[in-house]
Length: 359
Image (cartoon, helix red, strand yellow):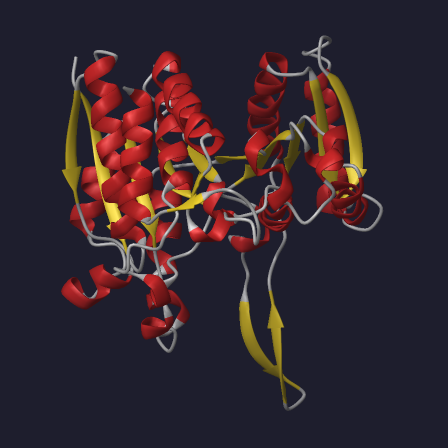
């Protein structure tokens, strides 16, 4: 049975890296017998330019009809002066809410050939493999009321940090299930010593943990978690936390690997459908110059195969191919050491190297 994949190239370097990743997806689909139907649509700044909306109704309709969505990146200085609700990033938020993508998975995996690229000592990050599970549709980013008002002749901004019990329960179960398949350890991050909403978070996660006696659960305040990520990152296996804390901690973990250009992500709905995108931004300063690192987008395709297409062998093949390419000393500029025997290539050549490794 065919599975529909919607491709959203987005803005900046998005089209550069997505075209390479699509070639990898088509290759593994052919090799592993995946029957895929690919379609394409607009989102973000380009969608604003052509339709006036960062998320045209046609795009959301196609996304809802797809098993998975592959997104490049959205945004750029060109659209920075638009009102908040009309900026390219609203297209991404609209996709997350419109597709009910409540679970964001961000792995921070350090491929062994890149150990020297991390800002930490190689012995602290060698064989690093952390998975951060971030609740994506609740918390302070979506809480109401919100806004800016005038009080006593001065402006006051306000946002509401709110979580319901069922939202905490469902993201906790996703994290426990993933921990069960990995190292059997889950760390829940909160600020329960200050915030009532995260006191509830801790209570619910603890209660859910009783259904997973084979998973070791720990709790950590977010400020300590940030410190521990840069002090001893390998103590973590799976981390689960709310929207805002997850946004911050996943970017901290990203730099442990040496480059945002290496990090994929997945945002999943309850039925296993999802949106897959690199963690990096649109980098419009290098768009169209064959300089962008496509590996994060290629690894996002691997996550798509693993979590939405039920094709773990295809996912393994992509990840092994990337590791083989890095082991051969092939690098894009962002992951090239200042000194060393490596071959620096552009976006398209890196994609071809992965295709060759797949063969």
